[in-house]
Amino acid sequence: MKTTALIALLLVGPASANGLDDLRAALAPLQGQGALHGIYEARESRTELDAKPAKAPETVSASAQVDEDANGFQIRWDRALLKRAAEESNPAKGVKKNENLTQLIGSSSATRVANALNYAPQLLKFLANGQLKSERADTWQGKPARLIEVQIVPQEEDNDKVKVKVKDNTHLANIWLSADGVPLAANVSHSIKASFMIFLSFEKTSKEEMNFAVVANRLVVLKREEHGKQKAPGTDSEFKNSYTFSPKA
Image (cartoon, rainbow, N blue to C red; front, side):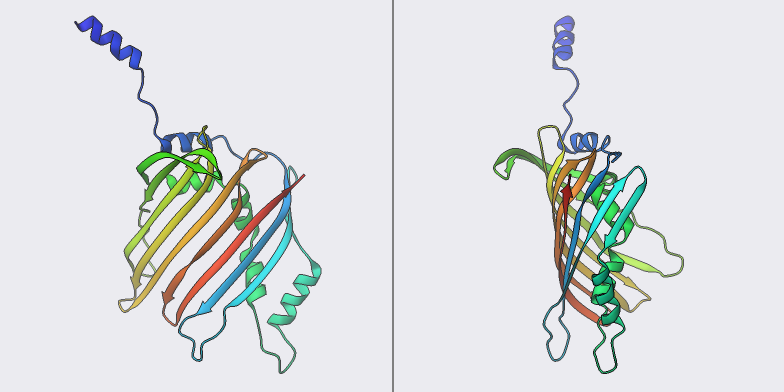
């Protein structure tokens, strides 16, 4: 009887990994050693909800050539674009100042763009505190896929200078995986509520939608769209942003 049970156990073998384990295993070797070239485009739109009188959304967009190889990482903005940004942020007398384009170019830093073009390390870090909620067979763009739902509760960080009390900081991700565990797309919902200095508070709810591809041994975010609302002292706004990367041979 004992022999029969042992044989049955050996035939079953180790328990199969779940979707989150497969995802982590697929991300680990994607370290981005290969050369990559393409066009990075950013578009941001913001509406001030508490503006009186009401204002139309402020929208700004820009694109740049991105090149990465053994010699380094480079973002090349068009000279005409940089000139326009400088003129709008420091206009002639009588012309309203507009720093939206300057801020967009500034926020599209080498670190931020490089992370989007080699996203596996960032996604692994995000999933470090992840808990698998469910998984099931599904489709993505008409092809078979596995859909996993992961809840993330980040660890709180101490801040000696500003006492921040976090009331809510949760993230729920739906991630579509290929047969080998590589992520194809993801939807991530964020909810953050915090208070600081006793009477001040901050709230932000948003949703990200991302499409991925493996290029040059790296996980590339081909498209990321985010929209949501945030409320902080002196501002109450909603936003809708889009960031894309088009690889070139």
